[in-house]
Amino acid sequence: MSVKVLAVDDSALMRKLFTQLFEKEGFTVQVARNGEEALSKAVDFKPDCITLDINMPVMDGMTCLALLRKLYPCPTIMVSSLTQKGAAITLEALALGASDFVLKTGGTVTRDISDIETPLINKINALAKTGRAQRPIIKEPPVVKQKVVRNSKTAPFEVVLIGVSTGGPRKLEHLVTNISPSFPAPIVISQHMPASFTQALAKRLDGLSPLNVVEVDSRMKLEAGKIYLAKGDADLAFSKAGSDIHVRPVPASPSFLWHPSVDRMVDSALSCYQPVSMLCIQLTGMGCDGVAAMSKAFKGGATTIAESEATSVVFGMPKELIEAGCASHVLDSPKIVSKLNALCR
Image (cartoon, rainbow, N blue to C red; front, side):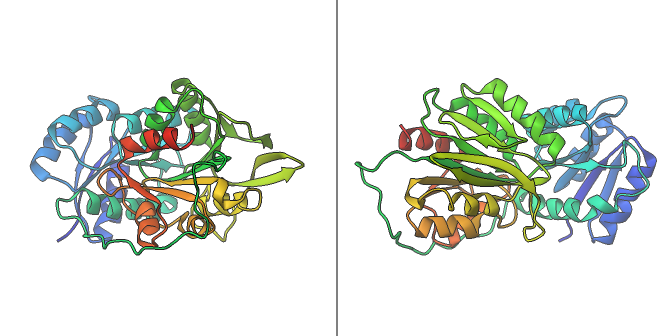
């Protein structure tokens, strides 16, 4: 059965470009010129996924998104501009329940969408599958024994590493809001996102959290009780100088598909920490970024948490870790921060 997509944009040119792209992929497509028209068409057309422009006349994308959640809940991808203002509004949309976003890198109206075609199609396919009633049956994960077993006398975790992609900002908001004010270890996060967005996300999270949240835009010494968000369009690396451990942004490596790379972050951390002192968390996201390095850490004694299928926006990254047999705990999203606080107190 063909994936049904509703493309909402006030630009006739953008509607045409999206229609051509989606039909080429074999999708069934309808379009809407504004949020008001989108609400009516969504109820009748019943799309598997919606692409939603933010700036539109009659009814803008934010108002439409809020009403869609009541009238026709559906995976929604926001179409945003690559600006600081666009980043802030898009993060608000993600907090409201949007699943993901793509960027109009050429401006509000562009004749070339070739740079977003592949990621947009991949996101639609992943979200449409997730949003349907019939979901894939996941096999029970194989049992893999860790080489090192933590006991009650072991020192607290020295670092927490979090990997996340599609649906991440909303998950991170819940986590940083509910983290213990006396949390004893640094938390380092790789969220797949462009640079202008990670700066805005760090600022937003800092306003919600009892801990200080910063974007890693330069070499920084890790401190207990702080949250470090990897800079977008780059990767994050750890280094050690004496007893101090630092993180810094490094150019995105072509060896990894997604950036900031979770695999590169965790693998780099392994050069500075014993695995038993690491707590790794794999949250929602499509693809497999993080599974290789987290599995390596787990087999060396690290504790790992994977988000459950039930609460994942896209059950890709955590699924890979579970099926590798390298998840110490599989938890619904709301329970992860409680587990984090309990493990690290």
